[in-house]
Image (cartoon, rainbow, N blue to C red; front, side, top):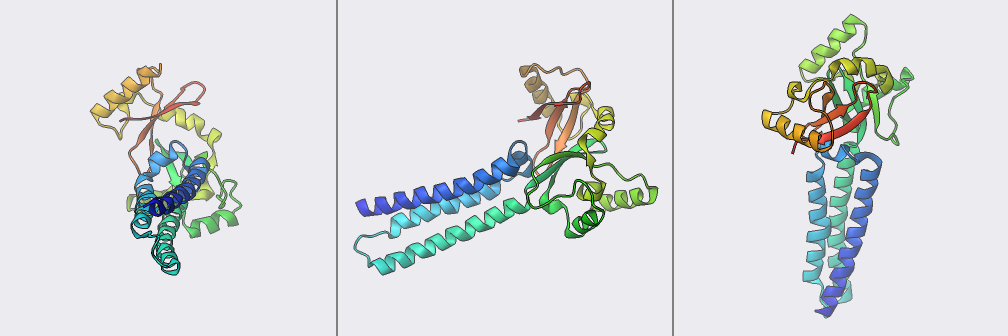
Amino acid sequence: MKFRLKVFGLHLLTSTVVLSLTLGTLYLGWYHWPGWYLADASHVVVVMAGVDVVIGPTLTLIIANANKPRRELRRDLSMIVAAQLIALIYGATQLWDGRPLYYAFSENVLQMIQAYDIGPGELKIARAQHAPLVPHWYSLPRWIWAPLPADPTERERIVSSAVHGGDDVISMPRYYKQWEQGLPALRTQLKKVDEVGYFTLSQKKALKQLMRDRGLATDQSDAIPLTGRGPPLLAVIDPVSLKIKAIIKST
């Protein structure tokens, strides 16, 4: 039993360290608040943790036997580790492909843009046009403005595409502009919490209480939704300086 526990402990420690380093790097680089929440990445992490720090070490505890031939033990452990590596690589790839690249103000909402939201064709166009905010593999999350183009024909084409489930302007880096350039337009879209869409009445009540708890006023036009794959958040923005004061979840 002592041998089993020793091998189990070593396996659990190694698996935990590797998983922690992988998730920690992704979190600190791309998924820090509010990225992790908006990307709804928890289900991928649960699978990775389930295989790498629960199932893998548990199987090791079961099969580890001091009386088993070392060659057979190494073979069994190798199979377990291989399954863990597959789960780790799969999960890390999913998180990498979905890493947050931008938080964009577009029209009347803030939206998180993930890596897989931008197709290779759009990247090629943006790079050919030398777009200043085109993403690279090493790009970290940035706040930007993604307005519709001024050309009415192109504008109509993009709106029609978005309505029918196609590409929207937020997935077209060629149109991205600096965050500061969009602040005047952002000011016009700020609303009181009760007027903001995306939230139920009970959620708005909870949001206002959370704002009061933080010393934020609830009776002025300073709020706008921040959306992503997960449940929406409420961004509270100073209507004068237009600096983000808080990003709050409803529950």
